Length: 134
Image (tube, rainbow, N blue to C red; front, side, top):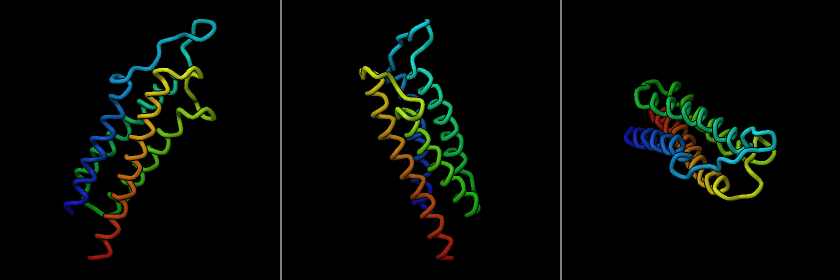
């Protein structure tokens, strides 16, 4: 199960990067009409909550022992990564239309969440493969 531990640590690392990404590449701080924050502010607030949830679940993968729990944890990581990738899309919450810093942060968020989803899928595959071998 060395591969599983590597993937679990990868999920922890990727979700931690998703938590810190808006601090590393800041989003715009502009205000929309009426003095309320722009759409990107709300999108990245939602992404922070889902990234925190992904971090907690990925951390729990390090201590889970049963195959069913590991499979379910990998599935949750996969689903949360899909949600994180969807949030900045214009048909979901969306980001600023002018591009700029929000577009750069959304670009890196999409890449990292795709890698997190791939990690979740590999965790599921490794767990199911290990279960079939036993």
